[in-house]
Image (cartoon, rainbow, N blue to C red; front, side, top):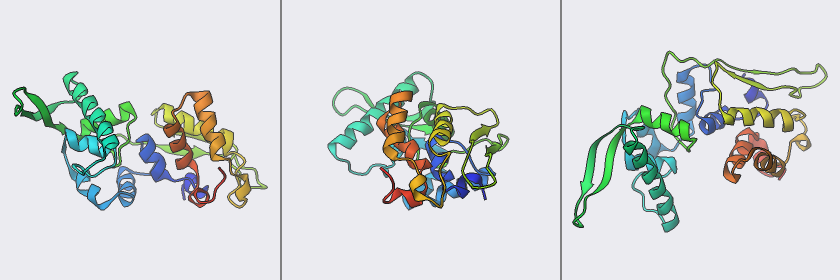
Length: 232
């Protein structure tokens, strides 16, 4: 059993949040991620290309071309604009550009993007992505969560992430939160868990995290049994 699993942390949730593989192999990582996604998402896991609008919907974890309310449509359009900006600046290669000139002025409607490029763009910009992100088979991530455990209890004393040189702000923040807030957590004593509000406020005030990102970090590190009726 992986040390994260033992203490109740979800490797699937952490992997999805950070876009990194915390499993023993790429196959195990993709299988685990697939178990947690909706049925409508499964066909997208085998795709080589995606349309720009499909990508925008997927960032929102919404089935492509679903009817949206006004607020969600505004958010969707902002991601569409961001994707076109990346196409124009050669960050993403596009083909099959569809143009609409029904109003007497040409405007781009959609195009085809390379899925692997989209995934790297997602990681670079730290956007949400509900699908497993494929990594080159030659890139092996050696994940080790080391802990110094006192013989008298099972409390985590030290947690460090090693990912074969892979480094990100998200990993740093997770390591900081684990050491500062979860080092005295005992799975057998519910009252030893830190409060969500303390973690969220700490990340926002000391590390400049947005409210949504701070809550995401707290959520993925909080064991499932604490998420209902846990300490607020």
